[in-house]
Length: 638
Image (tube, rainbow, N blue to C red; front, side, top):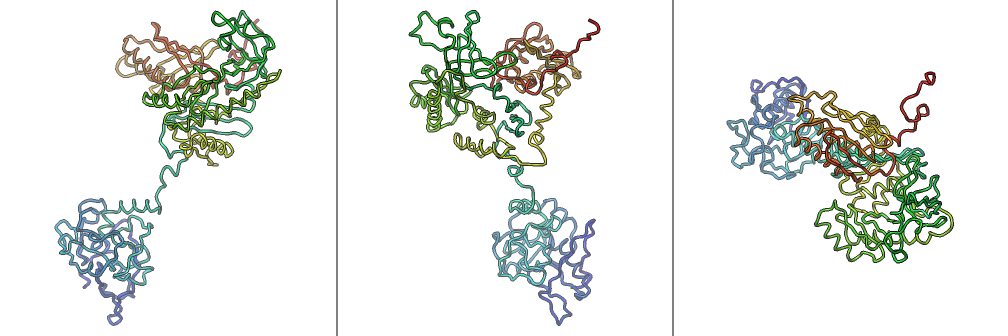
């Protein structure tokens, strides 16, 4: 070839890497000038290797012309084809064209591949008129450089460090994923750069790891995520996230052994029977005596006639009774007790000595309820009642039998220990984390993250025993730089939940005031000025307030009587829509609620079962200056 047929290297803002020159195929008798090889796509140099410049320019030219799949291998200038190939435009994915089109991946190249004539199509694609239909195959022509030049299509890189070219009958080595996209050349490299990068990621060389391997606990799909944060010797926090929003929070401290006693079973001693209150105070070994009401006392119907007898006939002072706590002591009130003991398990709740008690969770679909009823008819004990929990959905007969057998053994141990003349603890509920997992954990949870290794192994062992199919959803969080609650924004949401004012997305607000008798929630438009008319503005504001009010009740664990003051709406349909929205949002709350219709004043009255202290009480103490009133009297004026 002569110099006038050598195209200049294409100008670009970034100079292409220089390829190392191969010494294979040189002719010492011809001045050391390299002779063209079969399948070679670069033009032969006209200068001696000592100059070094001509061959490098030719290499750059072949990268722009001959190697981009749009030329005939002669090095003639090409315009626009490389840019079109980079964008993945015309000529992509056509059979019969491109490198390796007639060759399976990994098949060794032969010299016959290089003998096929190369012709240029009108669209600038090479190999479209090849007699064999295989297009152009770069067998040994792309000589090995310094590891920066790619071989064609499905093959690898030929050669080693630029000292020799690979023989035609030798299998090509597997390509390594270390080339930047700018170094791709040839038709396959230009039109399929995206496919190369995707293949490189699948082979594990570079690229981001799958999301499941980067973020802990996100290996499964589910609506909820549970985060367990342990402060050794201080407290254990359990946060329940729905998406990214915090919907429930629980805290347990070492000193809560006498206050957080819900579900514990005691051997108690009756201290005082009050006929006027139809209740009795029972010593259970805690600082405050528990209260046992007449309706919670069990009795033998054969000993009494005429319905339920009075409490003074059923209980006597100094009598020893077995009781269970159904409500934690709150403030100055003691724990509420019952003699109808129940033992909760993973799938069922067993009620000893109450054979008539039988039920299945209403949250389960009808088909599942029928299936569980058929299973329970066979395994149900004759001396105890059974209540099937929501977690039993999909549970097999063997799992239900194993859970019931565990509860029966537990009840046998409790009855054996119920002796003596002094009050003491018979059965204690597990720690907060285990209790939450037993009550809540199911397939709707995408994972549980725990930042304490001891608790992690304890929880993992428990779940592997009762629900082995869910054990892989429990993960340890050991990031020392970002705490667990900071990673999932639990801390900042807790701070907002302790405020009395809650902002709505549209600019409206809620003001939550808790009193001894009830809790009042006031809905305001605040910064929400609307767009069309007043009725529509109020309607949209109330819809947002209904959703957020249900979330705040659940998050703050507010119980008792609750009054929500929505903004007055004139259209009855709007009032019904707001009430329906409010009830739908409350349906996700596992705590029992009862909602009444909107009154003429725009008030919604409701009740929510109160079991323990709410969120504000858990994180605060009574102010010593004002004793909780929120104000200090000026003594000098009195």
